[in-house]
Image (spheres, rainbow, N blue to C red):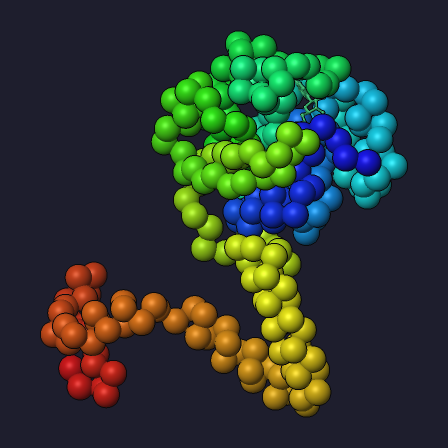
Length: 255
Ligand SMILES: C[S@@+](CC[C@H](N)C(=O)[O-])C[C@H]1O[C@@H](n2cnc3c(N)ncnc32)[C@H](O)[C@@H]1O
């Protein structure tokens, strides 16, 4: 069953998940049927909130038993919490009425323009990582002007729509999960095939050889980027500012 405004469409869910940095606690304060929570790799703690009890009843039989389900008004609940920097909140509130193609109510609990304004004020004061989806509207672009912002096309009952996703944090250097990596279906399938090919080959190797490869891959990932390494070797006589006696070494060992 597709929930109104649900984010399970191919391309939509993957785009949102591919913007999620590693986190310990994951919260959806406007859960609906919580497509993103159900498609992503679970966090240590997952909290799903919806004001509508019929929604949380549905979730109770469709999500793992250890997830926390709350029937709450997110606008009341969010300001009462203390969040750590390792918490990620994904907000998918009802779209602003004026930004909808039909301008008609869809949920038992809708939000007024003032509610949206209040939500944006709450979210921009939180110390944790926040993502929020919406359609284009000056209220969102002005409150979230300092946040990172991407757009993508998503399939709706009324055809394709441009979805906006704002994030309070810089572009992630690592992701919470790589299972949906890829900008489109073809690329995601190509990456999945490559992962299967490589892991199947790895499985045929003796255990220590597997670990040797794993350790070399880990080292190469943690090594400085090639440009940074070249800059350092271009300036062999630059002194280490913290310890002027140490001069940067050329790769061949000369000072
Ligand atoms: C766009 S839907 C979420 C869809 C969801 N992302 C999915 O994939 O199914 C928005 C949800 O917000 C809920 N809602 C509306 N006002 C709320 C409020 N003040 N606090 C918590 N939930 C609210 C509605 O009941 C609705 O289920």
